[in-house]
Image (cartoon, rainbow, N blue to C red; front, side):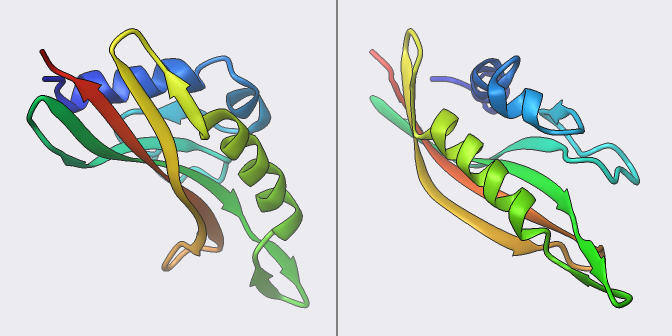
Length: 131
């Protein structure tokens, strides 16, 4: 059985040096987003980690994007979100490692409460066979 840390390591390795990582202005993290960042950061987190012969884990890969301002009002940066959604979907659709496989279960764009930004939530279903 893999720990949360090992699973985040596997997902990190897939994203590291990919077109997605190169396409954002910020950095990739397995812990927290840098404090007060206004860059396009990628944060990996574990939602649920099961156990058993087939271990199923839900993983979030969130990508943050600052809003545009029009007439003094913040609104989502639709064109940038669209570009990053496409890059993320292409990379995360299906990936395989030596002992795991993950697929993109769901992709959504949501507003960050209290900040002028949105994030792309990529929910992955990570499966590991434990023998």
